[in-house]
Image (cartoon, rainbow, N blue to C red; front, top):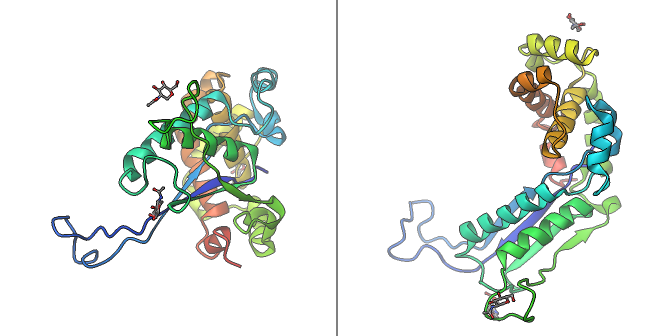
Length: 257
Ligand SMILES: *[C@@H]1O[C@H](CO)[C@@H](O)[C@H](O)[C@H]1NC(C)=O
Ligand SMILES: *[C@@H]1O[C@H](CO)[C@@H](O)[C@H](O)[C@H]1NC(C)=O
Ligand SMILES: *[C@@H]1O[C@H](CO)[C@@H](O)[C@H](O)[C@H]1NC(C)=O
């Protein structure tokens, strides 16, 4: 099962925003922004090894993954991450200084190579080298992040929270009313892959996951799967909702114990 991994980027600021002249509505009036929290995921990755066999072209996918290893950030993923950093700089530039300041920002990553590489790449765009260059030849500033070993990470409910895990496993094989409206697509899809996925949300999610990584790596789907992909995406979304979107458990996924 894919390890859920993401990066928590906390932008902390003590600046008062509700000053005269700003377009403060009634809620924001006389209030002070003390903390901004941004959560993002990693960029495109190679498939996780356990789901490789779900691909329509296992050999080509294995070969395309080889330069990186399985479950790792790809060059496309690094490009995503860099653009993410540029967009963070654009959106939050008013809250963080041009240069890294340890009092302003706290960055937390899952202890996973793809998320840590995502942070490093994104932060290169958030803090581009400027007039405080420490090197004549490197246009880059090192930006630190922190992490918690996987075993102790409260944000990894899938691994560390028995209550969430039990709920999750009870849903892996479950026919749900929410999936029934997709029965036509699931039947078409099942015919294409030679396996009936009806009543197996986790498979819908894992298959779409492998399709995403293989397309990003330039390994095409079959024409029939490609044509059905928009509908497949909807089914996978519904499956994800069942597995991870249950209101009774989302707080546990966010680290509540
Ligand atoms: C870093 O940010 C803190 C909090 O805003 C500020 O007090 C401090 O002067 C800043 N340090 C530098 C070197 O800009
Ligand atoms: C910082 O270093 C980069 C890479 O050499 C260079 O392109 C840039 O002009 C430098 N910036 C300043 C302000 O020295
Ligand atoms: C898959 O299984 C469901 C429920 O058992 C059934 O209704 C459907 O016809 C099957 N689809 C295919 C393509 O075999």
